[in-house]
Length: 79
Image 1 (cartoon, one colour):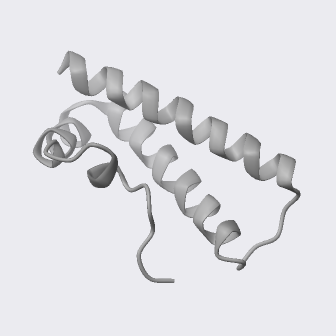
Image 2 (cartoon, helix red, strand yellow):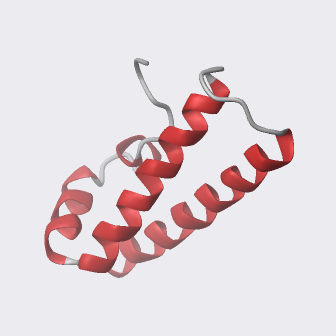
């Protein structure tokens, strides 16, 4: 499938070290990041034409991804 856009290290440039650290020491952050990654890959498969869903479903998935990104941003800011 190649490069998957919207990976966390791209969304939060310069914070790769902090992301890695939080994944190892903060269970909630690690679980949230994993859900984000799974959802992001699902969206990428749909946008790449590998999976088909209704437009409304794709929009809902994108909203969930954005909410997770906001949560991750908040967790990074607190760390």
